Image 1 (spheres, rainbow, N blue to C red):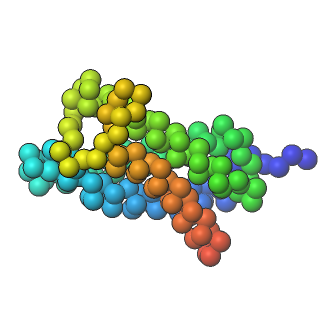
Image 2: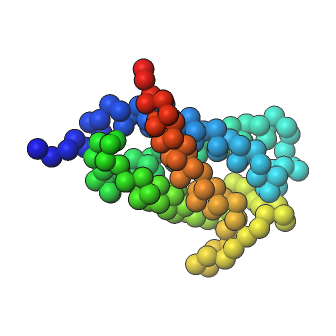
Length: 161
């Protein structure tokens, strides 16, 4: 008999919902608070609007990070939680989040002009685009770290209901 796929495994969903998503939300909130100063919004907007933007971006990050994880499971054809290949899952999740971020930064900076970088934003040139280093680093660091911390919590507590 073939092992159950991840989406049929209640324990997998528990780890995702009770550990990965909360860690992802907390880590992204901390990241957004730390790097909002690297956008012009920091000096051009009211504190209330900055707080709204940080919350809005954090919620978007959780959505992106959650979807990136689910797409990684589908692409990698992951099985039940006990057989997860965490390094592969984390690497693909980070890659998908980074790819989306490159697209989003280009769309919002060049096309929609929804935001602009402050002079203090470190930047790299990537395929003819100028992209902020901190948004890229966020997606290379935060989802794998959230998955690592979720797995650690799982191993520690077994996420008992």
